[in-house]
Length: 463
Image (cartoon, rainbow, N blue to C red; front, side, top):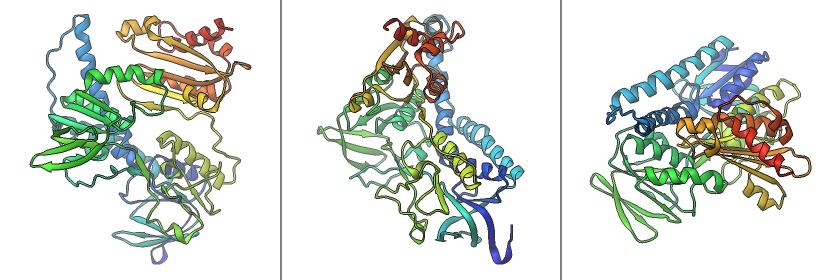
């Protein structure tokens, strides 16, 4: 790198140090490209590591342990009432989990020769950007990769600013365990954090403006989770909006569209995320985000500006870390001149609740909307020997296949460990496996993975 007059000249400048950004930077370095990452926090990991995926799954693991301890009473094991100490829990989450992974990423970056520069990156044109911060500097590049991620979306029409009204980032800091918590939003973030706080002792009320949890997802997959949430939460208000929030001393008064008014110690707003593309100086380039802030890219992750690529949440849905990481590899290899493309058929998604919900490929609602004929098999975990030994017969494995070719088009799983099991489903969809292939593949007995084989056999018996 040339450091004359605080000017860095590199092959690739990556804007944002999240999963998409650091994956792209590491792959660029592997391919011999001189690479720098610009991140406002001078750190790698992004929202996923510091404010999202990792800390939330840490808390959900705690919730799962508490849930298992409670369920153990059913087979004669009683650990007594749990006692949760927030200080050790916060320390474990921040130091043993997040901190350890962060140190690992920093070590990898150092080993690959990827420099991390702290500050806010602003494009000056299609070949340079300035870094605003404690030590302003300029970076000239041959190519840039925008990987700025997303932020929690605000609640439309409600503008109350209070430390008692939290977004997902604030909720993961575990300020306390409120006696009464209102969760606004029945998507995956609201459900995951709602369950975590319920396990820790909060009386959780969840409100969702649409008529079901995880709106748009296959009802067969949502139903077991909905039943579990009905037991964990004090109340679930579907088809309801929050019309106002008002601070009353140490409480937040929430008014609902049905006319009810209820008070809570804290409120969690979990109504989605929005791309971070404003303030980057993209107007000095040929990149033009749409009205939602999404940057359009082609199958090589290239924007309308040939020198600038984009990956991750800033490129729109699905906003998933593993999608961003795959895009990061594609962008790096495309910049290096390799024949790379983001042409993946299946991008798996997981809701890490109890039970977990996971799916990939085509869903039954999507097939219905498209008027596409599919063969559907559902295997209830009540018939699974492994599920019986776990005391978890509430799961379901679902397959969608093409009626003419037998090709597996989609897989949905709900139950403990669904997030791990969906990998086989994703491989089946991505590699065009048929139901005959899946049914003929020997699966270990007794395991939950057998449910995929069983579902395939159900489809074969119907042919």
